[in-house]
Length: 466
Image 1 (cartoon, rainbow, N blue to C red):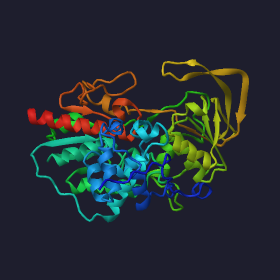
Image 2 (cartoon, rainbow, N blue to C red):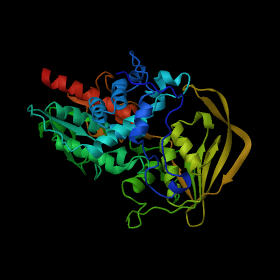
Image 3 (cartoon, rainbow, N blue to C red):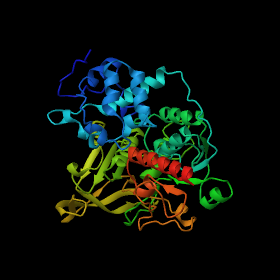
Image 4 (cartoon, rainbow, N blue to C red):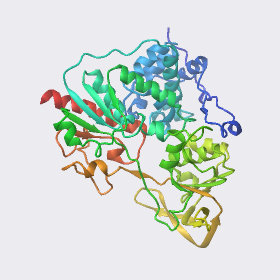
């Protein structure tokens, strides 16, 4: 019997914590759909035969198929469709920029709101985690070894795909915990770490070996992995963890953080817990410089750490903010103050060398630049001082130079990103592949996962054809 369509032009709302309650805790903001909500929302899908939503997914999930299973109340069947393409559905359902990917292509979005694909993906992954008792089976070994550098979304995806094909996969992670940006960058209130750990446990159950506290380039080099340890291929998925600064006076004052350091102390080192041994400033007035998702995460964390006033300082306008619309809305609801068309020119310090303010200049938007966004131009005689005691720089990151400096013959570009052939992630070194932020610079979790899938396929073909 055909499923009765739901032609409501709006998405089923996502239940969430009250903004003035959640901005004081690190519990997850969005509470998730109930089964009834999920089925109701799934029935909004038209099941388009050409599947435009799937073309917007970097890992190619059969979106109409998994949503059709939800509409039939076959939640486990929906999970099987999801997991055939995505190694981390519970993660992607929470942090993917669906509005510019799958949901951006949804036909329902032409005359109303798109189907809530991300919310449905999250529901299915959570349902499976709470109800399934099956453990992944170890595939039959094929006798070949592959090393992966970095246990972030790209590395974990490649590890999962290669393990399913029978490879002995070892993942080398520099930090003491696997997960990469999923554990050090994205806050608990957006992505609970227990969910990430569950996904990692699944990979271990398949036989993936994860070695932590292994800084490749220091402890071991890529040449040693291939020559001394017998790995036939290496996938570099080391991310882009080197923070950028503006180069303005006062950046060395106490109270100036990179967003990477600030978020790592809070998320990975649990600085928000009372018994945490990780030192962090408990600030009163915080300025976060930048307008992306990382800036929103840092600002919302600062609020939860007890700051009375938190500013997002961004040199363009609200329309140009690169962060997800949902993240901006959540930040506004939680009391974050947006100081747009504003650019810092100096960090001010007191006699103790502590930040006490930020000298800023007002901006206006001129003609579009090479990126297509209108170029910010300084307004004459518009300097002012923003009184803050903490400044968090969130203006982007680049790959750490350690791997390129210890791997002869590995080609990189002027930004420090590893150069690949673009099709399958092959670098200038035979048997060495790379993908994710190490190649593109800072991007999204799902794009990194797509690169991991692509590289796993290419590595399999390379080894089988050797």
